[in-house]
Length: 487
Image (cartoon, rainbow, N blue to C red; front, side, top):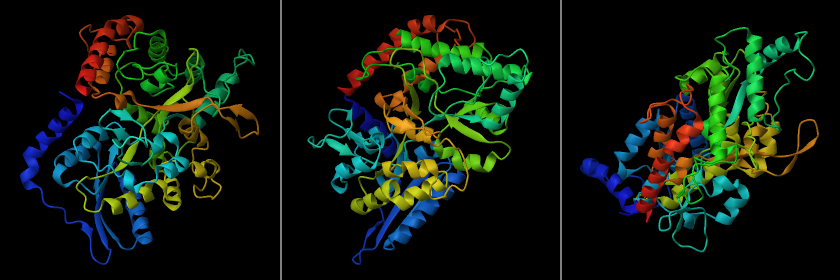
């Protein structure tokens, strides 16, 4: 059974339960050219407040538009609402980069490339963003191909959500000064402030964490509240599978070495013993109880409100020792997709384009801590706050987020006027490239001792190499099955 058929069946099964309750859309365009459409999104109240403003700004710029605004407080509620209204989806709504494929293959999303100038978009927006929602439902390939009519454009990018390590600069400096002031510490042993352009190596990060922990004189202090697993894998020139997602690579040395780095964060006391959650890690950071965590730019408004007792900043994710390794952070995105049943697709595309590429909208978004600019032309303005829109709000090292999405290898100039080669970049989550993410959940569970072997890597009950070698055949079986489904 094909991937497309499976996708359609999974979604149509939901339609059959709710289809009789669906109503014909009332949105459209009248004889005077007045447009009515619905926009839907999801996240916390801070983001809801932001998007109300963005939509209001759009309606001021386009007074012939009336937009019904729908918002959901979390991902689970939002996804359920979409599935329960498949015959009457909002005209414009948000879908993540690893979520839109079943909707596209099920025929629920408009391929609205006829309303998009792709050549122009690719000059305006970073490469990852411009083609994030380009997909061929026949060949199952991502990316734009102007010569293939089956290649669809399903969404402008909402953002590109790059991760970076955030750190409590106030606490770091305090512990650094305590450690460095000890008479026994030589100049070479002293801690230095981390760099925004020269990432820590895996070993350097562990060493710094150990020194900060030692300086705290508190056995229950753990410098790092959590570390992004995918960023560690990617930053050691490793991946879960090959480019076609058909051959597993978790048993290769680079992958194993990256998992060993995460294990070492636990075993050396850099991270609290296994059992915490990302939520508690974030709370620990906000509460000033740790030095390092990780964050994307969409969290800025939350942190501007909640972090008032210390200064925080950004550094790139750590880079591994493998040949060819670069600091490679997780990137992810949501896109502005359009319902295939919308009676105003062309007009809906105007709204999507405005939110993703309009300069005024992009300025409003970074000013309100929603996202970094999608537009290449606004990078320096954002990094240097040349228009004063951020009014001194952090993080100061905003350039790290830009470095993640603008590729690597370029020669850049740091704040001190010194040129350097950019070795910071980004990559999508692996689940984007596979039909199902079940394998990812099972791999995480396996490493945590919840698989049939019952041995937890993070608690030192088994080595990463032994655990990954034991799971490799299962990983390959997942890929084989997904390949059959996609044919």
